[in-house]
Image 1 (spheres, helix red, strand yellow):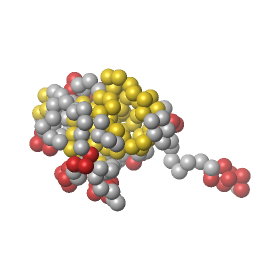
Image 2 (cartoon, one colour; image 1 turned 45 degrees about the horizontal axis):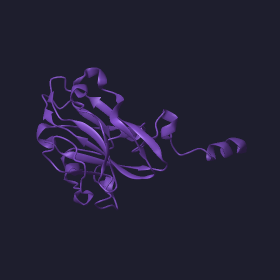
Image 3 (cartoon, helix red, strand yellow; image 1 turned 45 degrees about the vertical axis):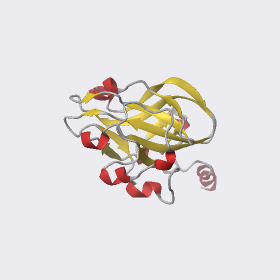
Amino acid sequence: MTHTRRLLGSLPASDLPSEQGLLAWTYDPNQAGHVTAQSNAGVAGRITLTRIILRKAITWSNIWVGLAGVDTGATLANNYLGVYDNAGNLKGATADLSSQLIVAGNAKALPFALTAPFTAPPGIYFIAMLLNGTWTTNSFTFKCSGAGSSTNAGLSAPNLRYSSVLTGQTSLPSTISLASQATTIITTGWASQWYGVS
């Protein structure tokens, strides 16, 4: 019994990203028990940001998303994922994901490749999601936490874990002002998306 207790005491409290073939994640995917439903009025070219902390240097090639559901009848254009550093500089972005977000078989955790991998030293980064389109249903959903307003407990801009900046965008700008992070989306049914890194 003592030997077993000693072994278990040396284990991490939960799975690590490396144990699932990933380099980092915003939080354990087991905690992504909710879904965030998208709506035409709620998107409108808005950029949402989810903070991620890297503890070691990596080569960042993909952003993993928990795509919970798709709307195959949606009309989408100018939909991107990207990565900003803690100074608000765009470090990498995907190509337009519109065609991939309406494929029923893609409703799962899957990676989206950055157009060019980049070396990311340890530090704070923000994964950006930009959505544009017209949806026919509310089935277009992403896996997220149910933390709601507690996501940003004890934090303020420019260090919020979940926030939004800008609206009316059709591409990810080369720089953003993290000081302008807003939290109003949290009260409109959005919640902090799960992301993985590889």
